[in-house]
Image 1 (cartoon, rainbow, N blue to C red):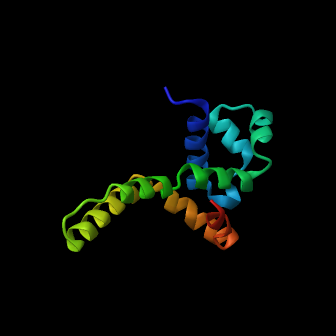
Image 2 (image 1 turned 135 degrees about the vertical axis):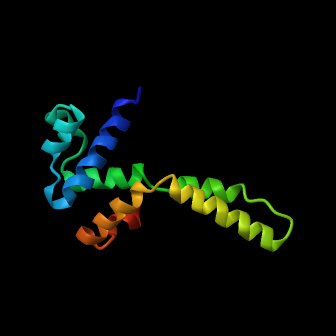
Length: 116
């Protein structure tokens, strides 16, 4: 069973995907995640803070760094091929991030991505 934070993030992601930034509200996230609104508001002052948390949660950066730390190959060509294969795999495992990044670019010119 997923923990409360991962369930909350998953439901918040669904709300942002379905309603976009302008239609997403803390009330909708609370309703979809079955989290008391006051509890959600204690964690996230507004949907902007929630978007920042979502970007951090779904960021591919840790997976990318891990993938690149394990690159193998005997020649430069082998190393580049392995790095590319591992990079693509890491990005595919974090596809949700790109939807959230698009929202951030539309709303904030990508400012949130720059700080995570």
